[in-house]
Image 1 (cartoon, rainbow, N blue to C red):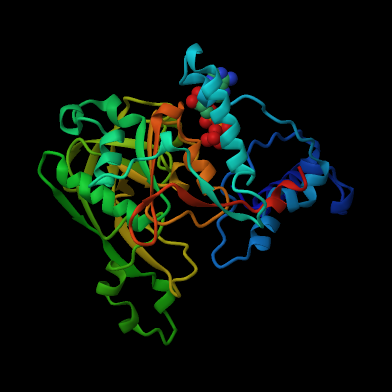
Image 2 (image 1 turned 30 degrees about the horizontal axis):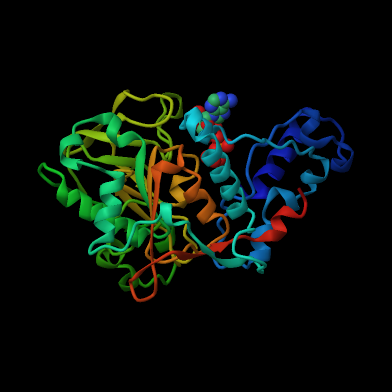
Amino acid sequence: MIHKHAFEALDKSFKDVLCTGNNIGDKPLFGGKVVVFGGDFRQILPVLQGASNQDVVSSCLTSSYIWRECKVLKLTKNMRLLQGNDQSDVQETSDFARWLLDIGEGKVGGENDGESDVNIPADLLIDDSSDPLSDLIEFVYPSLLDNFGDRDFWSERAVLAPTNEVVDDINNRLLSLVPGEEHEYLSSDSVCQDEIVGDNFDRNLCSPDVLNSLHISGIPNHRLVLKVGVPVMLLRNIDQRNGLCNGTRLQIVSLGRHVIEVVIISGNNIGFRTFIPRLSLIPTDKRIAFRFQRRQFPISVCFAMTINKSQGQSLSRVGLYLKSPVFSHGQLYVALSRVKSKKGLKILILDEDGRTTNVTRNIVFKSIFSNL
Ligand SMILES: Nc1ncnc2c1ncn2[C@@H]1O[C@H](COP(=O)(O)OP(=O)(O)OP(=O)(O)O)[C@@H](O)[C@H]1O
C-alpha cells in the first residue's frame, strides 16, 4: 500500500497546477478533480523499517487530511473466487470467501490485540509426512519435469513464504531439479561516488566482498543462477506500456552474455518476447549506512516468491510455506487470498521444532479499520 505522503504530494501538485491564489487552504482537494482510490486495508500496509504498529497505521491514507473528504464504497463479491469455481462449489466458495475476510479482519482466533494464533482447517493443510516440503512443491508443480516446457504451466502457480531466505532456498532447490545448463551471472557492486567525494569514508567497510554479500529485498542477488525455461520475476518497471513492470513474471527463452531473452507469462501482454539488459540498481534500504549500486539483471527466479511480492497476483495453485510465521499486518490474508479456488491452496506450517502443525500466527492492526 502506498504511503499517505504520495497522495498528499499529488493533491498539492494538482492544487498548484489547477488553482489560482496563494492560500492553499482555500483550494479544493486535488484542484477540484474527482479522484478514485482502490485498495483493501486488510492487505499489507506501507512497509516502514523499524516502525511501530501505530506509525504504520498513521502512514495510511485513512490518517491523512484527504480521508475526511473521501466517500467509501465497498465491493461485496470476491471476483477472483467466482472465476475459479463452478456452480457445484457455491457453498464451499462462499464459506471460504467469508473465512478469508475473517482472517483479514482478525476475527479468527478469538479476542486479541492484533496478533492471534489461528487454526487452519485440515483440508488446507499438507499432512504430516516424511517430506512435507516435497509434498507442497509437488502440489504446486505436479509432474514438474513433464510440464517444464509448457509456458501456461508456470503462469498461474507459486510457492509463497514470508521471508526472502526461505524463498531463496526453495528456488535453489527447484532450479537444481529442472533440466538444462546453469548460467551464472555475477553483479558488479560499487559504492556510489557521492558517498566517497570529500568525506572520510572508510573504504574497508565496503570492500567488493562486503557489497557482494548483501542480500537486499527488491534487489537481485550478487550471484544469479539461471537456466533456459525457468520462471523469473522482473524487479523493476522497464516498459510499462508493453507489460514489463515490477512484479511481472517472465520465462527465460535464451541466456546471452549481455542480455537475457524472455517471454512474458503474466499480466496484460502474455506471449510478448523481449530482451532484459543489466541495470544499475541502488537499494533504498535505510539499514545500509551508505549508498551503493549493483549492476545486475533486474530479475529473480520465482518458483517461489515472498508474500509481499505476490500482492496483486491471481493464481490457480498456491503452496503457502510457513516455516516461520508471518510478521506483519495482512500477510496471512494476502497469501491465502491469491488463489482462484480453495482447491488450489495448500499450506505447510512448521512449529519451532520443525514439526508440522495446524496453528499459525495472524497479525491484524485493527485500528486501521476504525476510520472506514
Ligand atoms: N468485474 C469482474 N468480472 C470478472 N472478473 C473480474 C472482475 N473484476 C475482477 N475480476 C477478476 O478477479 C481477479 C482479481 O481482480 P483484481 O486483481 O483486479 O482485483 P484486486 O482487488 O486488485 O485484487 P487484490 O487486491 O486481491 O490483488 C482477476 O482475476 C480479475 O480478472
